[in-house]
Length: 227
Image (cartoon, rainbow, N blue to C red):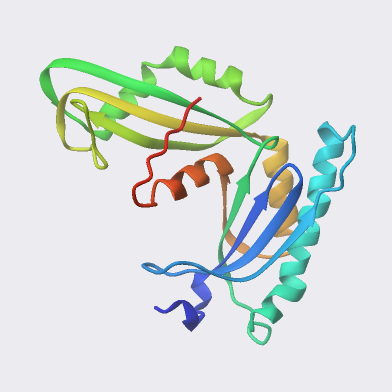
């Protein structure tokens, strides 16, 4: 399917929520093709020297509502979709600090005999990392919930592997990325967006992980996530 065929199922919304502004976009995407931004709108979060906690959240949500209304009231018409509003198949929300915090951790094992790497092995490594998990929670925002848990690198017998499962190794090291956001923040964001536009699914991501994922796709670029 071409990006320009404007199939309803390919229409998505993308929001970038930072510390100083909120941006939203209507994006057309399809498998095997680069996404096309049909319309975007950015709203600055009003600057106040002592805007913290609930006050800062209120200001952010006001900007988010302005952006969402712009997408609904102006964006679809500007994108040539006014006559037949497309169904929004997915909505993606990227959160930056102070709305999210993240941490990377290392899971590893060694064995005298080769071991087949399965998802059960990986889950077992997670279970045996209770100390690390507790430390991660201490570094998370108070009252936060995990929004991402991604395996970013796998090294088997000293060699990086993009597909570690079902391979055998005597030594394995996995780098795990986790991000967290306060439940009151994610809940308020969901309520603000869905009260103005219907979306089938809504996903949260951290800007740090999205940047990492984009950068490592570039040729001759090697990037690392550090805690």
